Image (tube, rainbow, N blue to C red):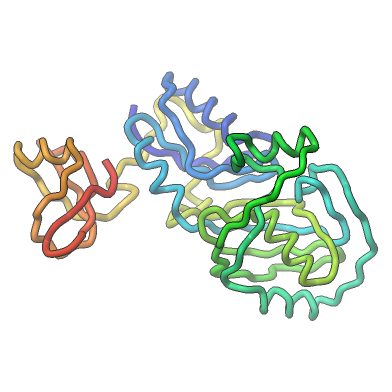
Length: 277
């Protein structure tokens, strides 16, 4: 069983829980997801099955879009509403001020990773340090905020959409937006509405999935031209070698005996290197 599923992850499940469910349905351990969603979060979770697990890193790198709600005037240790409350304060911020902060938020910045996350420092996950109440310097990552739009402001709740680069924590984004507003905040809701070109409209719920559920294939995922290769080229592809193809396209499917075996991407002077296999 090989292919990809676009799951609409329910709340109160980890991404690993979803993977475990898929493993049981398809009777395989070869399953991987392409971008962790916290238990609180819902929405698009792309799951790869069988040999398609080789695409996990590629699909994880795609930009992601979210619909999020932040609650002003409350700070938690996890940066979301499920955490322990650290601070509360009264807020009275005008919608105009909120609009101004959102409009002027930097498109690129160094974002601090939440202490309750799976990022490793010294071989140990940050959330392990946090649970043991051990102090550790939180790393920062350069992230891109491609789009940031307010959808509604209702009292102390601000709902917004955002499109971000790989590795962006929306929980941290909420904290940074609150800082610009001169207050604290925590994330109360989160839904991933898009990853790359895959929308929540395409996603299916876990209870819809059966052993007979049709999986997406490479041709469903990518619109690349196909190129049938020779026996000698097939051996080279298996070794991950560069090929001279003299094609114009940036990416191509390489097929052998009419089966897609790899995706190759243009390098220079007609040469192509392995993109995914």
